[in-house]
Amino acid sequence: MSKKIFSGVQPTGNLHLGNYLGAIKNFVSLNNNKENKCIFCVVDLHAITVKQDPDELKKNIRETVATFIASGIDPKKSIIFKQSRVAAHAEAAWILGCVARMGWLNRMTQFKEKAGKDKEKASIGLYSYPVLMAADILLYDATHVPVGDDQKQHLELCRDIAQKFNNDFEVENFLQVPEPLIQKEFSRIMSLKDGSKKMSKSELSDLSRINLTDTKDEIINKIKKAKTDTLSMPKNLNEIEERLEVKNLLGIYASLSDTTLEKSIENFAGKNFSEFKEKLSQILINKIVPISSEIKKLLSDQKYLDQILLDGVEKADLIASKKIERIKEIVGF
Image 1 (cartoon, rainbow, N blue to C red):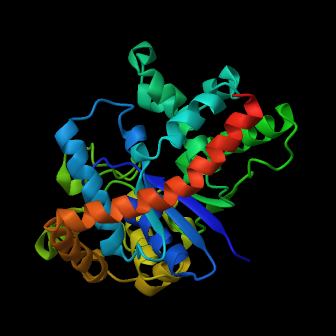
Image 2 (tube, helix red, strand yellow):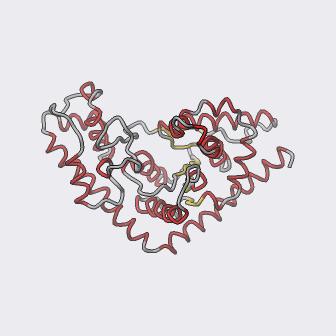
Image 3 (cartoon, rainbow, N blue to C red):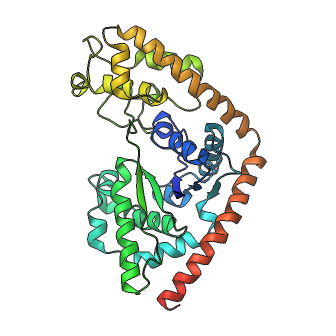
């Protein structure tokens, strides 16, 4: 059955292995399925919910597009565009914000995590971010949205908003209620230095992550220094539950080799960590170094990247502008 898929990636720069295994690798598979219609959005409106350096933001937008293409997303098969260039996103966010309820937003755990202790100083944009995310999805009648654990709650909110709009204005099925596409295998990649924390570009130590622009030597060094423990390699799934760093490294290996965590454990049971790390480094080099080289090559041709975004904006705007006009008619504008 054909799926209409929408997903967005924030242009925060310095995309890493967590972004690749948690989202982009899955995007490539979806893009390669001829039956799917895929729309991938560089969500720069979302990015400014926290202060951004304007020049850095422009650079990061191009880097995100370059990463998509270098990873295997074909812009001829899928729409790749910049969110801020399609006015319907901001317009729909306001209208849907008048449908969403404060109580729903107050339950969003990600806002509490990102705002921290002093949420009074957080931007209104950070608070209402999930409503804009709902607008992004609903404008394109997306049937499916790839989500990680941290976005499941936001997609539930999107579904609630769609259903409430349809009910309030008596327009059955006008806003498509999307289904989540959740990766079954390892999708949440943790820090190489601390298995209890998600891999992040904001962590101070560069040794905590594999960047998609890392060289062969950098990858080898980071895996060599990645935290493990003093025990031998685990023999079964039960043995890794409390061994967070080991579980993370085995999960990375499983994801990159397209196998199960169980099978990866079986492959390395009884072997020493140095042998496992050597194999993990090799599989990372085989996957990441070609992507890294291609990103650098693409970034040297800014006109090409900008043209892809322009082409994508034209295609996206054709779809979104029709939907927002109909939304406006429905609410009485």
